[in-house]
Image (cartoon, rainbow, N blue to C red; front, side, top):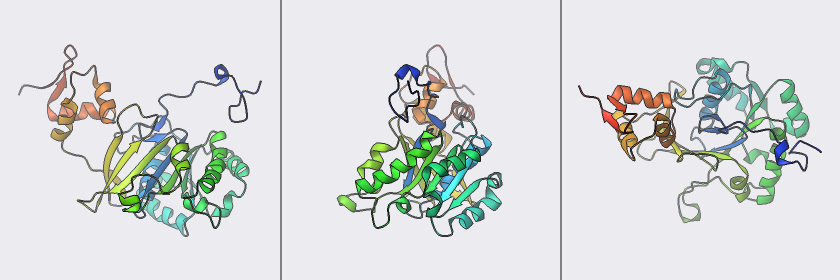
Length: 295
């Protein structure tokens, strides 16, 4: 019997066990398909490059979110001048990406099966695509379910070949449907298809800060919320004070262990340890209480 689940019927026991948890970057990037979306000029490209940097080097993203394994990343840009913009941003601030393959223009992928084989020949196993709107059939809108389905079906070819995909997209305009839009622009098909989402919003109280929300069905903790800013042309996390973070950690005690605290906050255990140490707290293993260490 065929054992390739992408090509027909297969017994469940014959499918290899997937890696767990299903994130290549802890609670941020899914190992199958992630949609990263925001309004124009919100920092999608910068965030994508910072994710690529961690995936290539294996270093924790923003110093806090673990990378499961390193990847060979390619960037497919469909915006005019996109490859030059990537080069400009990478040259001084992400030199580790100098060997990253960049594909420009829509015509590169007239044959998705051939494109996937080209990527595999270059040992690429992770593809960032900027952006969904420019992949829709000419004369069609991403608001159209059929148009969106066409794009998503094409991109499934990469996934079937074991290539993880991050797809950049736009969110709706503020005021659409009578309220602020916090979902991907257009078709329901996008929301139902993707395994995970990363949304970027500008902070209304500080125009230099972007707020990130990471959410999806496979996330086993509350949605992850991060704030970042672009400092010296690099993405850096805006950390709240240790005291504020410890206030969150202290809520809902007792705790079984530091992993439970990390899962609650959506950060790594190492970050929990650092915050506790700097703030003068410790976790009592017997009671599960987080206590202030006596001076």
